[in-house]
Image (cartoon, rainbow, N blue to C red; front, side, top):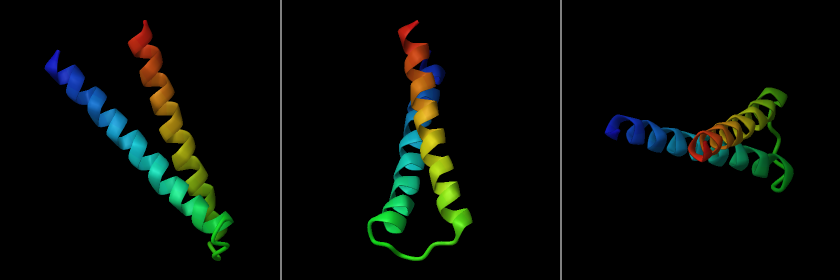
Length: 64
């Protein structure tokens, strides 16, 4: 049980990190209007989506 809890906490942590990094890059691109290469903001969108996907998947596992 403790190993499963550690894995859950690690997944939550990584998801929040992905959302934070991706969100900051998108904030730089669209709010601060700094020049970013296309691949960087596309990867930032991917990080945000991956973080959200992991959190949704985790919440569905907890509810069942």
